[in-house]
Amino acid sequence: MFLELYRVHQFIKKFFIEAIAPPYEGREILRQCYQVGYKSLALISLTGFITGIVFAKQSRPSLAEFGATSWLPSLVGIALLRTLAPLLTALISAGKVGSSIGAELGSMKVSEQIDAMEVSATNPFKYLVVSRVLATTISIPILTFYTAFVGLLGGFLNITSSESTSFSTYIQTSLESITFLDITSSTIKAIVFGFTIGMVGCYQGYNSSKGTEGVGKAANSAVVIGMFLVFIEEVIATQITFLFRT
Amino acid sequence: MTATENHPNKETVISIRDVKKSFGDYDVLRGADLDLYRGENLVVLGRSGTGKSVLIKIIAGLLTQDSGSVKVLGQAVDEISGKELIKLRLRVGFSFQNSALYDSMTVRKNLEFPLVRNQKNLTKAEINKATESVLDAVGLLQTINQMPSELSGGQRKRIGIARTLILQPEIMLYDEPTAGLDPITCIEINNLINEVKERYKTSSIIITHDLTCAKHVGDRVAMLLDGSFERVGTFEEVFDTDDERVKPFYDYNFID
Image (cartoon, rainbow over all chains, first blue to last red; front, side, top):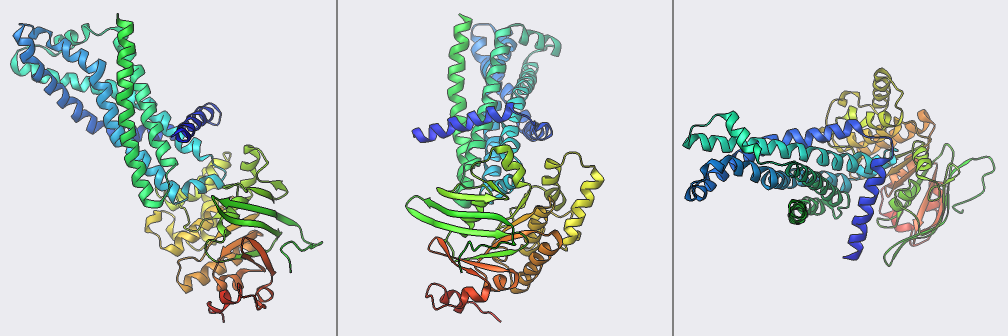
């Protein structure tokens, strides 16, 4: 247990040392951003849109009891931006991107491709790990705001099915309750989630062993540990944000 | 017949002295001594699990010995800085047992990878020329746009060797170059190892338990027995013995 924690600590420390020191893997980071971001768009769009519809539909009866259905756009906006969008994006990314990184690096490890990189005078940690962790750290916050936007569209679809309101009015009402603290905390949270997902996937893959069994285990652990840590971080972030709010 | 005989006229490019390496309670190398001279093919023979691959991974700096010294081109691999090790690795090629080609890249990208990353001043035309030249040297120019998954075992081995040759190393380390290949492909790989030596003027260590390969490519043969090199010399010298640890190795292999 303590040995594993020490290894994780060393891995994170090495990440920061390699990330700061030149040369920088700009092209590979961009390629990984494309892999993480663009290729997750379809799934994130669908999930975000459906979440917006369902959340608006489920919230309407409760608000209707107090005659407060006019608050529905604000409620959808706040819920999406503060929690749903960062959490949904992180969970989907942990499943799709985390497992992919874990399996890819695990497979490269057991087939000696990482060793091959090392003996050909390439720093595999910088090329494989640093680029992927930076890509998830950059892409997941962008995806988070995209999810929030798509979720708002879903909410709008549900609301216009029951009452007539223009899109601009809906967006304006949705966003008027959003504060600078909401945007800042969501951004920081998404950055932390992105870093965590990338780091867990890379750690599990880079340190996998025992052949194909190890590759499967690395992919599985990347998802399970990634999601678990995202939930823990969500709880901590909510507590810290609450302190700033009061 | 020792592993480190003094050859005054030969330049030593790899010097291994009293190297020990254990994994848990298992002592793999128990004081290995060996020299590789410039321009020679040295075959390291031994049964599976005797530490042959561990030895060349120590030479390449992928593993670190528990004690003893390993000097490659005059530099102690475990003592030099990371930057010096990178420079040294440009002079040492490593051909892996399973080829270790990058699955997600075409043959062209596999070959370009070490070149693009280490010689950033090259033009696209120069990179293409170097890539096509080494592919031609291993006789697989037609596979340039294929993915590794589309290649046969023998082709993968050849591409793996080509990828190391593109940096024009002075030393080649071959880990089981003929393992898992049919006899005809084995002979082709053996011929390729000899061609590489002649064309690129390399000094090589070839890890194998294939005696046909050892006889075909080895200027000298070193037999790893109980964690150290007890028999080193020409193929005939090494197997001219009644040593019960060596004789079965020869008897169970078919040699012309």
